[in-house]
Amino acid sequence: MLLKFRYLLLLCAFCLTNSIYAQLEAHLISGEGWAKGDFVEIGINTSGVFGANTSNKPSTFHENREADGNNLFGFIANPLADGWVDYDGDFFTPGEPEEGFCLSVNGVNYNNNNNYLSEIPGEIKGVNIISSDCFDDSAQIFWEGNVDGLNIKRYYSVTKDGLFIQMATTIKNISNVVKPDVYFMHNVDPDNNVTLSGFYETNMELISQASSATDNISLVTASQDPLMTTEDMDGSSVSFFAEMS
Image: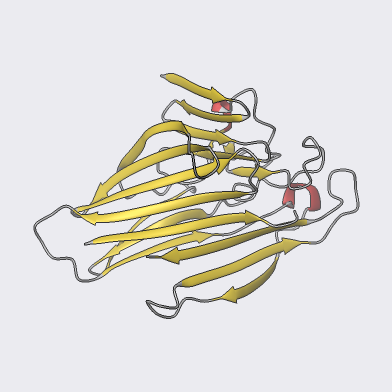
C-alpha cells in the first residue's frame, strides 16, 4: 500500500548545516528545517509541521511578526514583491497555533501539530537545493517518520520566484500486516495578518471538495481585507489546494 498526497499553499494576491544557491536557501538548524525563496520563507519543526523555533531563524530570514510569545516561525510571504515592506504572515503560529497532520490507522489517530502534539516519531532527514532541467529549482525540506507499521515521508519545497509551497506526503505500509483503513488529514487554522490587523477572523471560502477517486481535488481559501497602511495595502489571502493520487 502506497498513498501519495500533494498539497500547495498558494499566496494569491497577496549541528548546523547550510546550503545556499542564488536566492534559494535551505538550512538545517538544531533538527529544524528552513527554506527560503525570493517571496516565501518557511520553518518546519522536528515533528514535520510548520513552526520552527524563532531562536533558530537564519539571519537572512525576515521577522515573522509573531508577538504572542510562542517563539514559532511558520511561514511568511511577500506577494507584492516590494522588498518585504508589505508582506503577509505569520500565517500559522500567532495566538493558539494550529497546523499539522493526522494519520488514522484502523480507528487509532496519530497527530503531529505545531501546538507541541507529536505522536508520530520522526525527524528532518535533510535539506537541499534541488536543481531541475524541466522545472524551477527549489529549496526542499525532507521529514520522515514511522508509526504502526507505516512509513511517512513529507517534502516541503519553495521555488525562487514562486508564491506557493509544495507539500508532498507518501505513506507506505512497511509491515507484513494488511492495513485496510488508513486515512490522512492535513489541518490548518490560518491567521493571515492578525499581528497587523488584531483580528483572527478570516473570510473562508470552500471552492472545491474532493468526493471520489476521480474527483480528487480540494481547494479552500482564507483572506483578510486590506488595512490601507504601509504594511498592508493589499490585504492577505492564502489558499490550500490538495490532490490525492
